[in-house]
Amino acid sequence: WTAGELAGLASDERAWDSVLARFEGYRETWRTRGFMAALDGLIHGEGVPERLRRGPEGERRLTNLMHLAELAQAASREQGGERSGAEGLSRWLAERRQPGSAEARGGEAALLRLESDEDLVRIVTFHKSKGLEYPVVFLPLPWSKGLAPDSRAPIAFHDREGLDACLDLGSLDQDAHRALWAEEDLAERLRLFYVAVTRAKHRCVIYWGAVNQSEGSAAAYLLHQGSDGEPAAARMSGLDEPALRADLTALALDLPDAIRVEDVAPEAPEALARPVPASPELKAAVFAGTIPDDWRLLSFSGLAKGSAAAREPERPDYDALPAAPEGEPPPIQTPESFVLPLAAAAQVEPVFRFPRGARAGHCLHDLFEHLDFRTAEGPMLRQAAESALARHGIEGHWTETLMELATRVLDTPLGPDGFRLRGIGPEDRRNELEFHFALGGFDPSALNRVLAARAIPAGDLESRPDPARLQGLMKGFMDLVVRRDGRYYILDYKSNHLGDSLDDYGPDGLARAMAQHGYHLQYLIYTVALHRYLQTRLPGYDPERHLGGVRYLFLRGMRPEEGDRRGVFQTRPGRGLILELERLFWLPWPSPVSG
Image 1 (cartoon, one colour):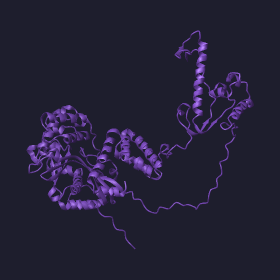
Image 2 (cartoon, one colour):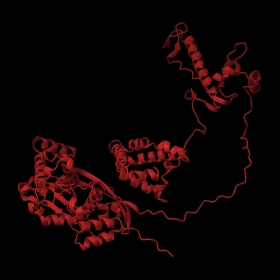
Image 3 (cartoon, rainbow, N blue to C red):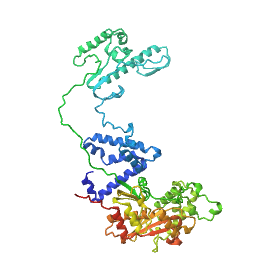
Image 4 (cartoon, rainbow, N blue to C red):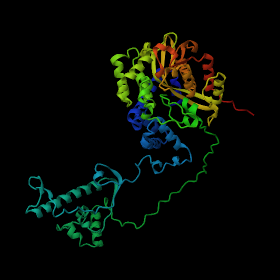
């Protein structure tokens, strides 16, 4: 697209929505059918071949694009599909674009391909050349002959009277039938020889001579047939090289404008020397600028854990396992890790014994994403719970527990005003809301100072290996955004297991979990993302009036009778903090010093 076309999208929302819809379709194709299907859809859906061919070296650019696509497709199938996703394959490409790296060399598969073979020599068989035409044709091996059938093998031939296809399995007329087979075989080889010779538009070069067994070939039949009807094979076997040449010369004399007989040159002739006009000495311009490589796709996890994690794909934040004491490795989470002695299990509520880990987190998020909050009860809720458990490979005996957990979450008040998920309809909610917002001159250490001044625990961002200013995009997923009474709320489901007692999900337990996993920084990033989105979509937007705050729902600890005192962390960042964070994420770069 031209710069003007891109700029035009800013003022044409319908066109922008159309672009988004197309690219959402390509991404969905990638997710369901793989990389090559998605790229093929994008290339044809956006008219890439036509546009590339109109530009300079269009064929070369298109060839390069398709070659890269093949390499990417091969990479996406390696290592158990780790590169099959967009983020993994993007990292693979970035590694190979680093100059001087072993990955950049890429081996023989990555060598530059020719954009077209239209002007090259093609080697084809007689059969495959039928119907084609070439400017010049060379027949280097016209003396091949047919293979005689095994004397013990059946003989296929056509009856001369009715032209019926026959197979002689051992009759008394076998010798006569073998002669018929040989005649048909010669006719087929003559037809193929005719096909080969007539492919040439300007010239056909045939190599001929006294080659071993060439007397049985189709060319011998045409070139050395005796005037008295003597078979070519018998006649040619008695001819020496001058006699063979005499037959060819006689044919050329009859057709002087069509045939010429020449000796094969023992060596290739020297290339035609062409005068080269003098030209000025050319020298490549020296690039003295710099190409910054600090643009990146950042996320909450990457910002909190360091630049190495920033290269990991950002996915919806599901379950988090308890952190191990400092200096100890985290526990290995296996099904046996969740088995309690029978006496202890009898005293623990089933929701606390519900499986933990990423699979369980996916299951719970999946359930709430597809539930209609207003009608999720009875048979409908049971069916949804059973389906979610089955999709994520969790035993069906947890159905009752999952139903009880979902009912509690939907009916628990999320604030003193009676706000409950049960009253939210599909038109007032957005699930798994993915966002990207621009970063420009973002300084993580400045963010750390702002949060520390407000006593907001978010981890030591200054200890990151790469504390320099960043630019690019901040990316993430919000589990749920709901609209209620004209206000917009950010909700995040947390299936973390904080303990086997309801008290573990009280204010102190939630405060520890929020600080331990850096969730304060997470909801602040989400708030800035929602703030920026509503600024562009909501007329008269005011953060004080339209932002209702954040609710982190620790699902295992939620009880309707406890209200928001158990399992519900809530906060509402103020207008001043939101605007300050927005400025931090988009600080202007220092102006260059003049003089």
